[in-house]
Image (cartoon, rainbow, N blue to C red; front, side):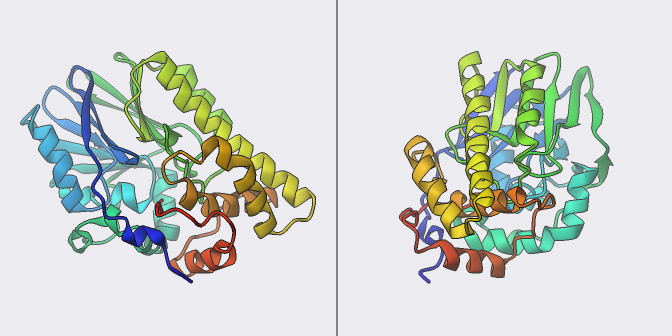
Length: 326
């Protein structure tokens, strides 16, 4: 086995810090995981913490270019390590997550942490600064509202899609949404822990909010109706196309490798130019295959399972890219 090609991907990504409205910013990084910033009357809320405390320092540095107010809240859109392990870098901030996300940290947080760090070293720069798993201080069921002075912030477990606990941050007055990985833009959805059957409904719930700006989990901030619709529809098309292929393969009695080869052949022409396509597909097909066979609760990814899956599928025509990450 040649190992994860991503171990050689050390190129830095260009960071963008886009103002979406007064006191609202998207921190985006050319397909690497995004963060969001909400500045209230007296404090700041950050959406998604980054992968390590050292990487969180760059988000804080950008915040300091626009305000000196303290960061008092960090919202986790879901449990994946690249989103949450930097939380300790926001000293004194309260960590907020859905109850389902906390349950997933209890069940699989340690295994997920080890798995993700092994997949893509660049996304865990300064991993020695991680003190351990990130645990929420505040856990909510379905929806909670924060008032940052006069600014209303709704934190909504919008529905199962990328994970079972997916949470969005919605500014109802400004109509700005931070979607986490429910929505991607020009970046391949990672579906290794997904719920394919539920994902279209979750996207419809986001569409129904009618945001005028949207920061996806990966990709540029979306600031026009056309861009927002492209992000929503692109995510819907990718996940629906893949799940349909998996369901057909399972119905025909095909093996995981056969379904993987069919999915790569069918989807590379349409989606192969998206960031991290080559890496996400083995994980995505594995989960789609499981769900098509009736497994509702995603199996836990461990470092050992990553290697076993990669060995099983690496001889397919897909393994040509150096882009590997979650």
